[in-house]
Image 1 (cartoon, chains in turn yellow, red):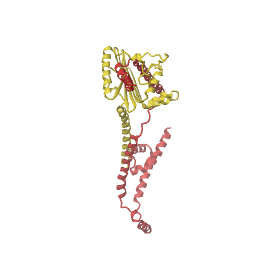
Image 2 (cartoon, one colour):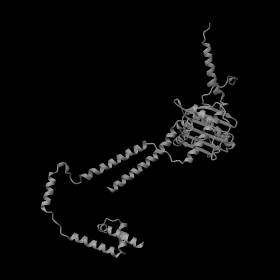
Image 3 (cartoon, rainbow over the protein chains, first blue to last red):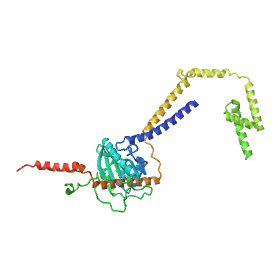
Image 4 (cartoon, rainbow over the protein chains, first blue to last red):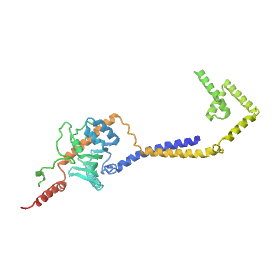
Length: 216
Length: 181
């Protein structure tokens, strides 16, 4: 009888441990299967080494942040509440050779995402700069946002997974000032004290450009 | 302190002497007791006394159960319902596997419940939350900056095909449908 009890107790502990591990794996699988998710670990532009800065904030932490900021900034809290993941990778001090390769591969990445159902909202191919902004739609709402930027000395890969309100996103991204982040080197020289311009943002509900800008 | 430790050990030894004689102690406990007995005269005498008592009890003649008691027991057993009397050995043979099956079922249900339950939120410090908040703000601000930059350089063909052309077509359709007087 004692042996039976010991065996059963051990079986229960083993089952709980296996389930706990399976639950963690389940979370990762659920994120990978989300249509708005971009696996930068696999789909990383070639020529790049380890990122200089890496942000990976999952849903539980986003919920905490939403609760924290929601009282004073209800719109920001509302936006964050529906997000599942924010991931950013910044590769700094990218050499010229690597930058060209990264630029080429970023274009390929954008193309492969487009094949998977992502819609290309913005695509810039200029000397020294490559920008792609893609949206993943799910029925009538946005399931994910991907921003791929290759600049003179850095590469930025950005992915936001979750239900995004484009108008709210446009409004908030236009009004947010940059916080002081000594631990995070900002790739863009943005002075938080400068007034925010009223330029339209893709995805936001803005009027069409003036007629004279459309004429050849 | 040494005297108190000795008294404690002697108290323990006297408690387990009977179990030692019955063979119920573990190997470690038996070794510990024997080690104590080899150095403690008082406890050794207790063990010897316990042994003599056990032998004396065994040597006592077996007492026969008085007839009146045996009759009363048999009379009582005879009056019990048939279903209450089970053959010897039935209970453990049926109960043990049934209990095992019930426990396995409970484990399976527990596993299903755990699988369906949401995992508890991660434990993060307030500093980590503040830092994550800064990272979120930076990310959104960066998206805004890229959006502002690129708004002025939207691909011409995208602008032409998705905005200009549909508008021109809509206007031309409207004017072509106007009735002539």
